[in-house]
Amino acid sequence: MSIQLERIEDKVECFEATSFKELEQRINEKIDVNKALLLEVAQVNHHVYPHFKTGQPIYTAVVHFKAKQL
Image (cartoon, rainbow, N blue to C red; front, side, top):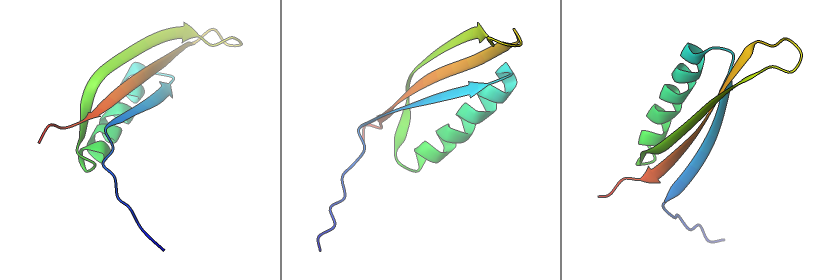
């Protein structure tokens, strides 16, 4: 058996929440986790859309993490 370790160069994660504060908290938690993998935020895209049944806003974000330059 052979184990090969490779460095993660790019990672994209999607987030969804019912409030902007909750969305921000989830993103910040993942930023801390990804720092251990030597990844940093390269780009963030966010959108708001109404829930199709309740009409309440749903906040979404897509965060692109890239490897830190050493």
